[in-house]
Length: 195
Length: 195
Image (cartoon, rainbow over all chains, first blue to last red; front, top):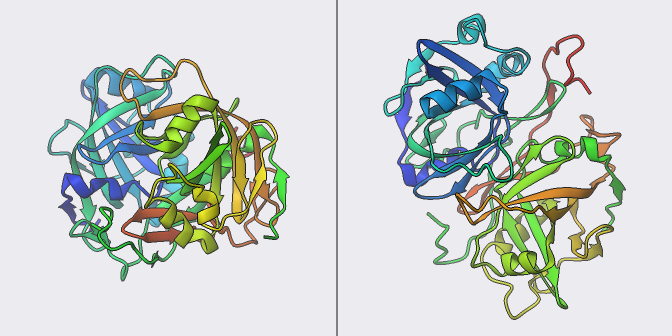
């Protein structure tokens, strides 16, 4: 794999997730590790960047996250679409699903989780305390402690419009939408959103 | 506007949101109404379909939602990209932002909120009780009580791959990604996800 993860400033890291790409969630604890597919991941605050993710309580990933207090969010590129689908079709309990899917990993820097090569971006996440369990036990809230992007697509805190933004959006039944070519509308002078 | 909202079965309605499109949130109470742009909206359960949305406490939209207990989620088509951006740049307090933006509305069927013409899909939402306020007051959780889609793009519970899926994904600074052309990976025989 020839991606080259480059650090993303945390105040710009929400931009990795803001367009709603499908993710692969990585986790590890006690000498085991796992990967699952998740579409239901989004920011809830710009900075400090916090996100929420739906990770069902009976899953092995959830067991590892609850034990370790952390997880990785990986944004698969199109070449990993089949692998992303397959990651959602079976449990990692009792085996190394990451290896079985043929995924290569590198180590996160701030959390003890593996991250996956072949992705456009990566977020290292630490569970917050307390969790919003009052309404829904599957909803986790986490703080992002480090973020990375493939510099060919995301650099200087922005997706690069001249590059193909090679992230994916999942629907159902094995159907994905690629991310389309960006376009720009007129912005308000002095908008706080401009940068 | 020539869209023709067609009912979406609630067990398939998560598919309207699963790919992470930007939304316009509509709200109404006491003779006033409003619209705001929101990217941070996602399902948290397939069926009964529940979703979570980040609606900041100081916003006028939040005031109307807290008072009425309901809101609408509208998925703007590309022709509304500038309007979607503009909706995020100013408050609706003390004016009719929906009218000021030139938006046409129709009435939701299960909740007293307006919905917006020119969109690909619509979800009518009722706040759940309790809300997950322990961690973050801006995070709302709601049940979807009815869903609609433009039948030219979404029919029989599915996005139509032969049509252009004309939804948008927002990044920052006035930059949008359109939804790309769908593609299909190999699915597992008997997968519960196939339908």
